[in-house]
Structures are given as structure tokens and as C-alpha cells.
Length: 112
Length: 113
Image (cartoon, rainbow over all chains, first blue to last red; front, side, top):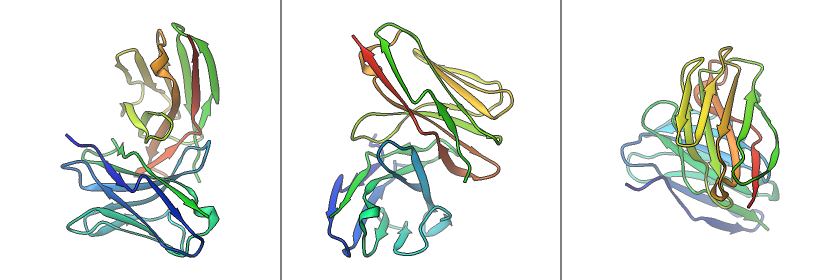
């Protein structure tokens, strides 16, 4: 009974490169969420997706960030032209029932 | 944006002691969730609360959904070393949207054996 899977667990990118973070939800879950966590802080909502639809992207920066959850395959969070301020832990969560969100282990992005 | 105030920020206790932490908000929530996060890992769901006044237990953990819908607390009884970690409250409600969780700043729990 696998949980939420995220990869890679650690990602290092130079400024200006692209970062792609992947998330596979728990089996049977069709709702995916992305959150960002800075050191010593709580998680901040970024985007909520269902298959092939972005439901709420109110927490996403307007530029350089995008997310998708295709019909087949994992959800992808894409950050173009990364800057040092993008360094953070990015967590994906999934839910089947409303409200109970289960989190993956996260991807720690470091921008050098 | 909407914020949750979680306190205390950190706790240093002896093994065997009971622990209490809480979250408050200036606006109402429909759902309260409590998570535990360990270093290098994602948050793990401990308890979910859906109704004002609801009191729910999970082993040595007990959480309550405040009657005003603006607060929640988490108690841990008879703490053990594996309770060490950061505990987060999270809520969702009519203002920010049902599926968007707002997180508190976390309570870091340290236990002296």
C-alpha cells in the first residue's frame, strides 16, 4: 500500500536552469496538491489539481512556475529559470476523501 | 493571507511528561488536521477533526476542534523519545477554500530521556 511518491528527493540546479519535480499520488487518490516549505516554517499552499485540471493555483507565483497532472503519469511541478529564492522543500499531497491530505517525503531543491 | 497562530514554538520536556499545544485563528475553520514532521521527511497525518467540539484520540494523542471553530489543541500523554519532531496544525475553511490547507508555524518538541 504505497504512499505518496516524490522524486527526486534532492535536486541541485544552477541559477537559470529548469527544475522538474514529480509526484505520484496514493493509489485511488485523484486529488493532488503542492506545497512549499522554507526552513523553520510551515507549509504554504501552491496549487491543487485533479486529473487534467488545475482547480486552484492561487498560491503559485505568477511567473516561472507551472503544474500539471496528466491523464497518465505523475503530477509535475515545473520551475523555469530557477533563482536562489526558489531553494526550499517542495511537498506533494494527495487525497481521496475531502480534506485528509497525505504527504510525500518531499523534494529538496537547492539553487546554486 | 489567512494565518494560524500555533504555540508554543518549542517545548523541552522530560520523558513521561504530558504535552499540550494549540492553534488559533481569527477566522473560522471547517476542518482541523494535526501533522508530525521529522527531519528530512514529509508531514504525517495524526488526527483529523471535522466538527466543532469534536474530541478525537489516536493512541496517546488527543485533539479537539474548538467550539468557536477558531481553535484546536493537541495533547500527547506520557511522552516517549519517538515523539520528538515538529507538530503542525493545519486547517481549511470557507475563506481560503475547502481543499487548501493553511499551516501553523509548528511546535518543535524535544524530549530529555
